[in-house]
Length: 137
Image (tube, rainbow, N blue to C red):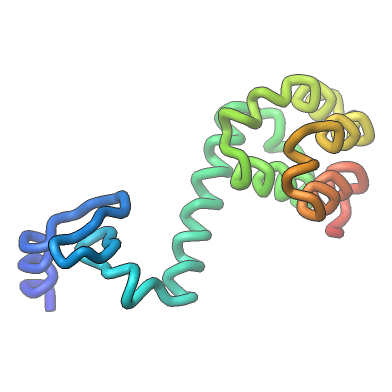
């Protein structure tokens, strides 16, 4: 199996982004045909876990003080980072300042008073309630 894997890696080549293969199919990785095969739920969960790990690292590297947050509040901020990306999180400077001072009400209110909250609807309500209360919503 290892020899086959190595051979397929050479023949297929690796691409981290979706591309159109010579057969006209959307493809990624080592020749994964996304149009006809897609990905399994197990593969999607593995990708999700990797993305959560990355969002967590980006968030805590940018804002180390958040490492002291409860599991519920840091999870809310990871969810937010996962959704908008660390670049956008950095733009929520008032929210970040409120979080730094553990002013949960003001942080949640600030997040709800944003274009993001309008765009994502119920997601914003759940995330900000987690920040506000420290409880899973």
